[in-house]
Image 1 (cartoon, one colour):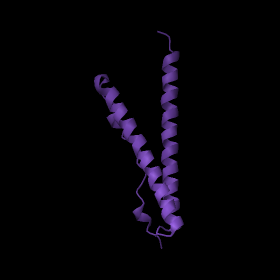
Image 2 (image 1 turned 60 degrees about the vertical axis):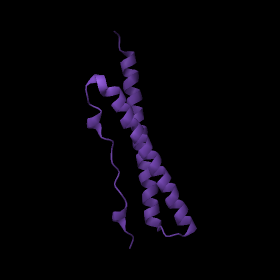
Image 3 (image 1 turned 45 degrees about the vertical axis):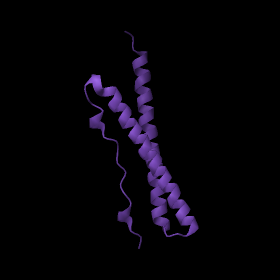
Image 4 (image 1 turned 180 degrees about the horizontal axis):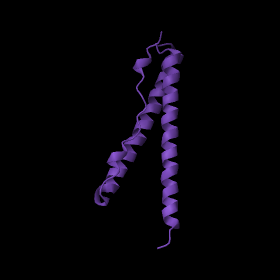
Length: 98
């Protein structure tokens, strides 16, 4: 039976670090965004390595390989939805009349 507990859970970015005073908000938002993108890229690389190990027969079983690929896909989709919400909010602010 495969070891399902070895797969780490998907963790959403920490939103509480984004809600800060306006003076320090820019760099912290950039840090959160950068770390989230790095996390998604790392998850994608781990999924690719898992697929390569499975195809070469080095030890990863099919279940853990599929779980790592699905995890990478979900993290990417979550990041894309976050991007869409940020772009939508930016467009809404730009439509406001001063």
